[in-house]
Image 1: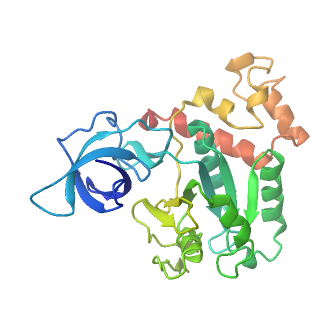
Image 2: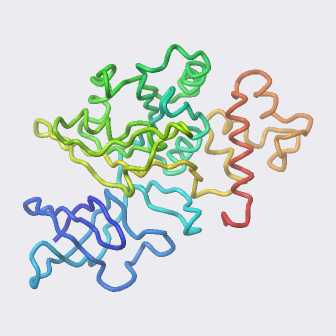
Length: 311
């Protein structure tokens, strides 16, 4: 049979069958599944697999093989020192943030957006809890800059319903993956779309003003609709997102406002974009074409990618 991976943990995966929609708890047949070598986890929600049911025990099965992926959303897992699969075969990445509670983290957005570019998956910024924004000028300035460089930004509130009609239209009939730090309200957004679903929502850690982990593994949620197939993959809250899939030398090509300037510096591709005369990147920062915070993100991410542990 063929089916869709809904969730997985410790090499046990829930697979929804294409034949009738029944769910099976499946193990991998054999220790290694072809095509997933080198990853922290072999499968992710959104993957399509071929499996067989276990006749000896109802509701269980064995995954035989993985169908070809359309795309793959990953991050570098420091604990396992290897890439971690977050979602597969998605139409868009929803980069979820908040103006406060927890605080606005534009550098996390820089990294999440970068991963979308690496995977060639369209990314949208979702600013949830916008009812708490208090018209913060710094937050607005960064959101407007993300819009300027070509990203769609939605200002919404799962609690009050502000902007939720736009959010529903955005996800309708698509497979979306949500990325965000703990506490930004990813589970609350799904609860708002599916009345009665009541996915557990975490409280904010008051001491550190950040969220507690409530989603410990990625899972796929189907959103009921009129003959439509709307699916959202909620990924675990991530405090530090390390992009994966490129090296430090090619980073510049995956930042939208940086890419047109690649190779145009006086020192060409060997320019470090830190102190050289004739550096087009630094000129663009001084001219406001590249935001100073985005430039700082670029330098930090590049330094991380140059560390031996990231190779």
